Structure formats: C-alpha cells, structure tokens
Amino acid sequence: MGSKKFYIVAIFTQIIYAGMSLSSKVAFATGMNTYVFLFYRQAAGSLILIPLTLLLKGKEKRPLSLKQLCHAFFISLIGITLTMNAYDVGIDYTSPTFGAAAINCIPISTFIFAVTFRMEKVNLKKASGIAKVGGMMICVGGAAILAFYKGPYLKPIISHPIFHFEESETDITTTSQKSWMLGCFILLVATMGWGIWYVFQAMFLKDYPHPVELMCTQTVMSVVQCFVVAIIVERDHSEWKLDWNVRLYAILYCGILVIGIANNAQCWVIKETGPVFPSMMMPINLVATIIGSQLFLAEGIYLGSVIGAILLVISLYSVLWGKSKELVDTPTNQDQPFSPDFLPQKESEEQDSRSQVDTL
Image: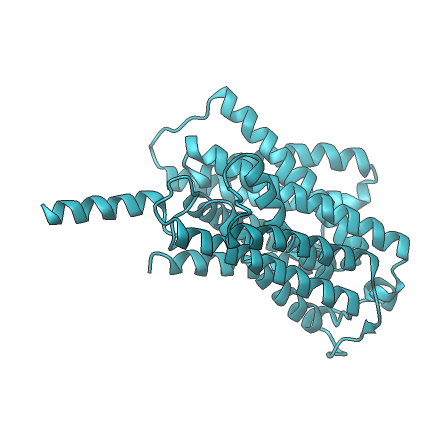
C-alpha cells in the first residue's frame, strides 16, 4: 500500500488540475481578466490554507528564518505568480486542451532542471540514459507540432455542452494564427517555470520538511504578488466586481480544490518521492481535460494537437521507463531522489534497520 498511495494522490491531483483548466477557460470566455482572476483564486486559497495549516501545525513551533522566507518568496514568484499568470494567458489565447497538452512538457523541464541541480543523473552508456534523452527529444518534437501545425479541425462529439457561450467566444477555429503562436510561447514559459518550481520545492523541503506550511507561505506571498501585477494591468474597477456566476464558481473551485487540496497533495508527493515522479502523472490531466472539454464546453481540437499530445505522452513514458530501468539497475544508489518502489528513503531505511534487528 506504501507505493499505491502516491499513485492515488497523484492521479487525484491531476483530475483536479484538469478542472482548473476548464473552469479558468469558462471564466475567461465570459470576459474576466486573467490577472484579476489569479489574484482572487490565490486569495480564496489563502482563506482555506491559513486555518488548515494552523490546525495541522497545532502548538508546535516551526518558524521560518529570514533566509527561508526569502527563498519561499522567490519560489512563490517563479512557480505561482509568474507561471500561473503565463498559464492563464496561454489558455486564454489557445484552449484548455492545448494547455493540458503543453503541461505534459513539465516532466521534461523538471528533469532538465533536476539534472542541472544534480538531483538526477544521465548515463548515455546505458539504456536508461538513452531513453531519458530520447524522451526529451520526442518532447521537443511534440511541442513543435503543437505550436506550428494545426491540421484539420475535429468537431466536438457533443453539440449541447453544459456551459454554453457565444460561438465567437468558444470556437477555437476563430483564434488567429498570431494569437495561437503567442499562446504557445507563453505556455512554454509556464512549463519551464513549473519545472524549476518542482525542483526548488524539493530542494527547500530537504531543510524544511513541512509541505503544508511551505505551500501556505507561498500562497499568502503570491496573493500580494498577484495583486501588484493585477492592479498594474487592470485599472477598471468594474472588472474587479464579482457576482454569483461562473466567474465566482471558477474562483472558488481553484481556491478550494486546487490550492487548498491539490497543491498540498502535490507538495506532499514531491517531498516523499522527489520532483520527477508526480510530474509523470501529467497525461491523466490531458485525458481528463479532453473529456471535460467535450462534455462541458463542446470544444473541438486540431489534428496537430492530437499528434503533438500523443508524442508528448510517448516522450513522458520514455523518460519514466528510463527512470524505472535506472532504479532496477542501481537499487542501492543513495543518490536517487526516491527509492525503487517510489517509497520514501526514510521508510526504506527503517525497514532495513528492522530486518537487521530481527536477524540479530
């Protein structure tokens, strides 16, 4: 059960993240400003995280030093404020399905940064290393097809979606080539930002192993950061007003489920398994988003997006196979960020010590 719980939590978070893409697109389709939306969702998430963190922390004192606060501020700026703003603008220019497909590049960018910071190793003399590098090359090809090749437009199967908007707001065939290319580039920036965010969090949690408190600190800091960005971009007071409509529902969904639950779950998985494993569950996000786009938005997809998404999934599991092969070949390598069965290192060490005591 030890390894299964990581899979269950990772899959659950990806389904919630798929809902984030869909709900965000619905809010943007009604004309909501992307920067204002991000500020409100981070503020809603803070209202959930602060009492939750205080409840879980109890009376135990674990204060962050000034240096750690500065690091958390920087991680929040990179992984939440800049990355999420870029992601929201990117899916506004493209589509939720494309955004989910682009997110599949995150494991590759995570792996690149993990290698850069010596959290992962690549040996091109072994099949595992070749699979990793080959996966990265396929990922680049898939991303290029997503950006530069559209192909025929595949109409949605469902013609009567749950959420209905004007044709000009939801039909991605009306998206200009210039806007589409810009959206692709912005999503690439977001992908790189998330990759380095995973790695920085894993590095931070080595010295401060409390993922819930780290996520709460990041979220609170991001509220201030996002407010500064939003107030600079959007000065119209009417754009800041909220009513009981899909905009508010999208904010509450992202604040409660994404920030309050999924982000904490994701942070916990990163702490226990390292930064690469949770990112390998990204294809589930793509599948769930495609299904949700058909059901809720009746949004079609380009053939190029389908081909590119398939290549991204292939690249993803090429890297995953290489990682699994590496763990099988070197099961006692202590430099690996997580153990063969995706069990925490501490747990494995405790089991080894128990077996030694039983032998004695």
